[in-house]
Length: 520
Image (cartoon, rainbow, N blue to C red):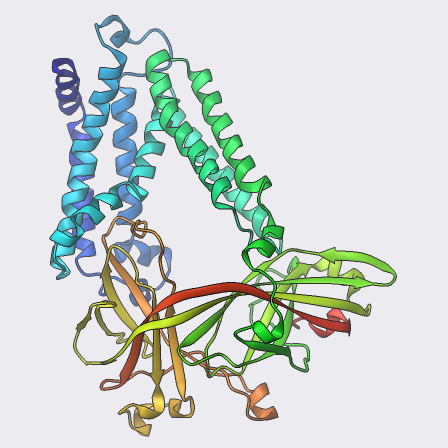
């Protein structure tokens, strides 16, 4: 224990400038997070200059300060090479490792924990129920950042080599993300719990054991190989064992009679793309399928999780591009939705004029409301046990801004404009023609907090009007994408309860892709 404390005190004396720098940035970060609504991005826009003016630069600056501090402390007794002075000292490797971990705990974890408790208190929430939750917050994003910094420091010779390695890893991650974005139809791949658990254990186990091995053996190439093997094994279990076809197991096929929603294909025409064409001709073409929806029970919502389109023709082989996420919701008052599906432009150009037999599969999730109640919107800040501390957004009349400890809540919110106290003059868009609007918050099924440094989660309830079909003119008219909320209106709030997942199958015989493609 004396040797651990000796190394700890030596590191404090040597690295006090880095310690003061990280604590100063943590103080500025805490001060900035005391006023979340005043510092929201929608108040400042998204320009690079306003990124600094608004204070949003403090979060990445704090992360970089911690990484710099960890690398400097660990590399003060470098683990690569045989000419370091500390090798001649009577140091035991496990005591050296514990001294470094103690330093990180005292000057990163402890100040961050107290800063998070302070933010929770200043937001008006009681501390006692959330002491353990804030501790769990420490093993979320901060733990990952600390673990990665330790790993980077242990496997590089000096600060310059660490920075070069970090830049290389960032470039590789950007390249892989770009390659993944170029492949349509793979946004809904699912993993079995077993393969996901094995993948996580391999990756994080390798990241945990590699620094220990490096301290014990000081063999950089073995440690690096150990990390690469763990990443490769995790990728194999995470990418190759599960694939898009596993969606069939997660979403069993049901008949139209057993479905919680009735979906049928409406007569379609080429739809105008809603995406700005900033980069010339896109690499993929989006197919749009207008659908009529009905028969959703009151107090229920059906989520369209994804869509898969396969095709065949007498003269061609079958093609199937995989599942594509949709993230659409069908409420009881909804009458229509538009499903979109991307395919490669080269594939589209080869088959766009051919008569194909299309098979459309739709993956759906059903939720039922529980514990429903009504709340009345106030001009002042109000509190709700489920929502947290909330207020009407002064810059966007379609949203309610809320602060909630640790985790965003799962919720279903219903707003009927016709029953509100707003006068017609208050609503410039005459939203009273829109009878019902809904807001949705995806429920959580794990105890872990939302990743982040602030324990007070800032989220929005955005109310989306339901879609209706009244006439040909109403079909062609662009619907409003937001509702108008006002003081004194009643909003129905409930917790969503998951009921089941299923999929349905629709056929589009003798159909040309060019009739479904969005026009620019």
